[in-house]
Length: 122
Length: 110
Image 1 (cartoon, rainbow over the protein chains, first blue to last red):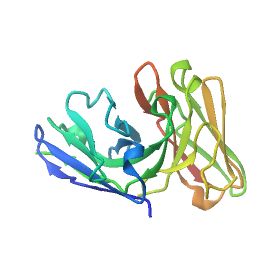
Image 2: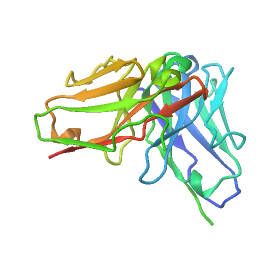
Image 3: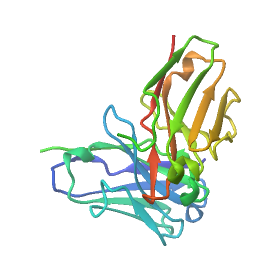
């Protein structure tokens, strides 16, 4: 069945790096744009980044621009989020989500992973 | 402070109707599709409405979406205890070149 499974979360010190992965199954990964969305404890949803179906374009939230990098390997059906220079305010559950429709017209996130927790603390 | 404005909470008795507003601007909700998500406690969000007013398969018709100008609305009729959740609107902000979410609305069934 259609499934997104995140991994790579954990506890990390401020200033360090972490790479999240999102393994995809049940659909043709290389035909969909993909997003990362995060949710700090007790807070609302915050969009992090998007990557086009073929990796040709990427956009980031201002809060992570220059520190995070979204990428994908369509041959491995996997989405990545490289997080550098982590801060305490990056502590959150990170979800990957599949986008349906045109990103710049307001695509819909129709499939979500279960999330992986990232805690930035000394 | 979120770019899209939603009421923090709404409530109603079982069987009643609630509406949740989501207001933005022409660069956000005005010119782009709005989608809505339900997040039950401790779970990942779930798509309820896409392209302003369309329901994915499996979403009951008790849930409806509409958009007028720069404002969108989610309606839930025949309220059930299982509808207690946080609800978020989302769109693309053309001026920011970014996805934006509303701050979320907690629905309580009295």
